[in-house]
Image 1 (cartoon, rainbow, N blue to C red):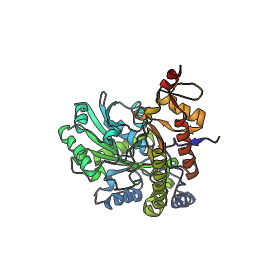
Image 2: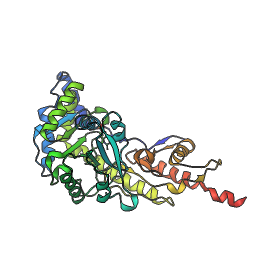
Image 3: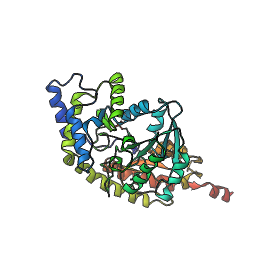
Image 4: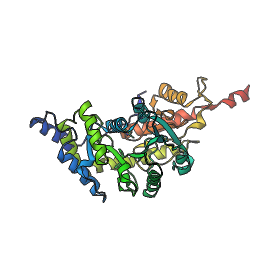
Length: 376
Ligand code: PMP
């Protein structure tokens, strides 16, 4: 049986040809030396223009090019967090935030959201978690793993909280912002509110299938960009010039790079949705963006496999799928969603088709534990 892997955070697409061509051209032209720590003027300007298309006005001095979105986040955590500060994150959320926080000064505070409520953020619950120590409210829009997109109205309600907490910054991680299947994402940068405390991180890994290039950016008030540039200059210098050239070419040819991928993702979303609908007792949110489903498989916890083993946890379920059916998904516990698993549909179509029938077969083989007892 061939292994089917739906666990990757990177899509299967090749990086855009324009990126590869631009990088090779830059290498041949000798762009292999230190560049400015903050990023090239051309790429920063292209990022400014990217937001201008949505009616958002920012200046190049508000942009820092970083070696990946992860580093943009780590940079911000390093610059903003003081001992004992709290970082408030709605969950389910990407496990990478927690991992980064292990190397930063802040402590994680979670705000649960529920599938039954379509993962809406209960503002009362958010407020109840905010204290004088809250330094960062970190949203992901669209979210990994749920694919939930916050509407402009929801975002503005969230941003309004900043007025009541003068030490609090909003960081909106918008790394999947162009991978959407209905309404486009409203950037937090386009929301009314205290602009001096609204920050966006973004990158090229997801929207443009460029995870291995290591390039991202942050958009923030000028003072934060200056502090973050100092941090980056001391720890990393700047992103390689030829990689910035590749990113610039990608943004400049955004539509031709993006549209073929979105077309495939839209179709794959439909296939995964139909596959999940065909399995009894599975509930899920249909993603508005990103490229994952995060179904709830809790019904199958407490069941027994054909070889007599009991599935006691989400971890057991994932191990069963992997060991006995060669199907790899990510345990929802990693995201704060027990009983759920994350499944990427940004995989090749034959893998997706086989994975969905294998998942159904694997789950239907599980028998309720009580049925065995009843027979005794
Ligand atoms: N933020 C989120 C929500 C992600 O899912 C990921 C990658 N899985 C990152 C940031 C990191 O992205 P990058 O490759 O640009 O560092």
